[in-house]
Image (spheres, helix red, strand yellow):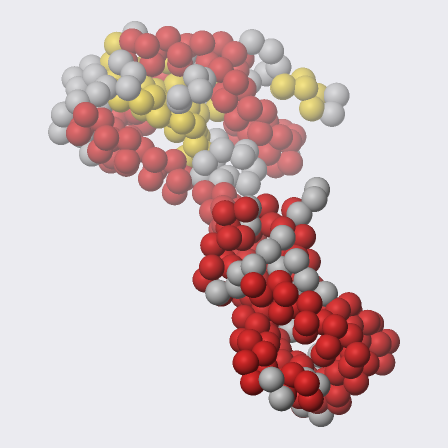
Length: 357
């Protein structure tokens, strides 16, 4: 993409014009650029580069980043091309694009901004030192060129610093996104039952607590269901705990498949699961419970050439006006045990004074 960095940094024609106005560069400076190139830079380019790197290599801070001859040779070539293009067409998108590239290159190799600025100061000083006698003897022209060099290097530095800032922001955004992903992953691990993949006890109870508060606030119905796998101890005793774990995973999978998208299921403990029906009346919750129960027991669980028949007992209750989390869980648990006592593989609904259905 042509001038991709100009687009990325917002330097369209208006952005370029605004930056040039801030620096104080105008059409009259184009002629000064031509004079600077022809009378100062081009005739002295090799000497300027040589003296510039003598300075650079005598600075301990610089030596930390200029650690091999090949790198220095490449930088000298890059610096030569940079100086030979200094100021040429400064009002064009191509000039801005190239200066942004220079800044990105320095940011990529982690040259600190303060070193970049110090190096620019020395480069500017060298350009002044190589003004020929005819310029030094023309006070007006000399002052104009001083001002032009100050402005054009200010433009180049501003574009370079722009890229440093942008690069750091990108790194921060990437770091923040990585932290967010790690945080989400850790939260998921902390809230999820590792065996079944559903919310664990602490998480599902916290969800229920919030759901109760919301239901009371909004005057909406809420139901809770306790589900317990029938004869699960016999599965563990007969086939071992690994098979029992597989049964738990399959039952959890079937529960999720039969429940509605808005229903919340969590592992309450052992072979018990807790289901939250938000904004749901008890009759509807019972219908969902029966559909779920039938889905669980309609086909055996096949594990390593074993076929294990499974059923569940379900206890339901609706939220009452004065209920807290302990009260509603206690009633759902009581209804579930009444389902057990009624022969298992059935659903029971708890009312304040009686069990119906």
